[in-house]
Image: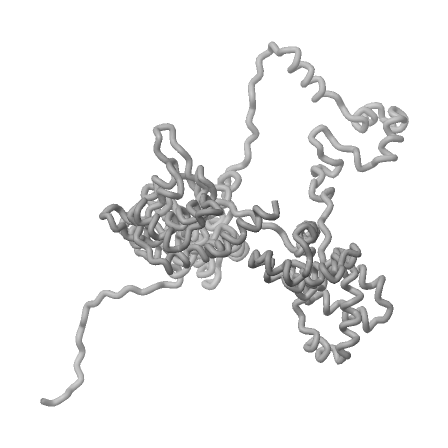
Length: 503
């Protein structure tokens, strides 16, 4: 069979991700802070976009006219008289003279305190209200606080340079994380010189900074209080026994009686193991919810988007029409058309994003009605696929929508991802149980245990099976317990006994 070239027509369908479609998908997983930053960049880049916070484009702000009756009360008359009182400058202008000639006492007071000349609305003479943030004292930063002290206690420039590098090596708690050998090689200095500067800096305020471990931090503070005796040093050298609640081992190693140990432990509790946290290390960011969930008057749930964090943008078509008429070059018209297309896409994408978030949140609330009504024990197992099938969306879309989004419910503020938990099958044929609800029940059982009946992992697994039909292996119970930072039954029993003996 001979091969020859020929032309054929074929019809096929394919899904192509355009740049705008990819950008719309990316907008779904952005938090409200990231989304606002993205919109800010678009407002700077696109001249056809405007903020939708004020009036509509092209509509001037018309002051509202309020009709008043001719009869007024004594209170309203007093308020009106106060509003009609003129200030000193207007009265002086009416007499065509200076203010000091009419109100000499007022002028003297203004000269003593010129910043206090505010109008009735609290605004200054410039027309702007005073910024309250200007009068709030800022918290000191740890690095600046230590650098000011190092400049006083260190004499040479070389020592101050070493101190600056040591300050940069501190973490938020005030511990030194820098390697002294690496620092000596970097600065070309001797390790002994660096250790001498470090010893001097360990006397700075707050006491305990520049320590390289918790025992060293506590030892610095005890030395400052003249309480670091050999017995206390032995206690600091064996803090692992204190962590394991092995009081008998501590008494044997330290060589003291029980009363002395109680006094030393009380002394340690008065110390600060993280002295650097008393200083400001950065702004505290508050989590702002994206969706509000409230109880409705009919007993159901009302789901509402937090419009305060959603950016509002409008397309100024009046400006586009006026500029298009004056455009002559083809490049200018193409630029305006591209800006209009981008602006229309952005407004549509923001609206679609809000509707998608609202739809996903409504489905989460519907499936987790038991949790919102009765608490965490009624949290149902839920997966992304379950929500996606209920709202007829793709699973990846639900995953993007629930990323970095928060729900404000009557039971607190929760991330949307919190409600998606794995299912644990019930051995008695009942409904599945949420892994988060199981962890909550394990915590409840441990918190209710007595010193004479400390529950082991096997006992907890057996109790879960008898109470709720939850069949878990011992290692699964241990994994959940360790994930909640709960020690083993041996450690808990030892802690309870020591607490009773020390009481």
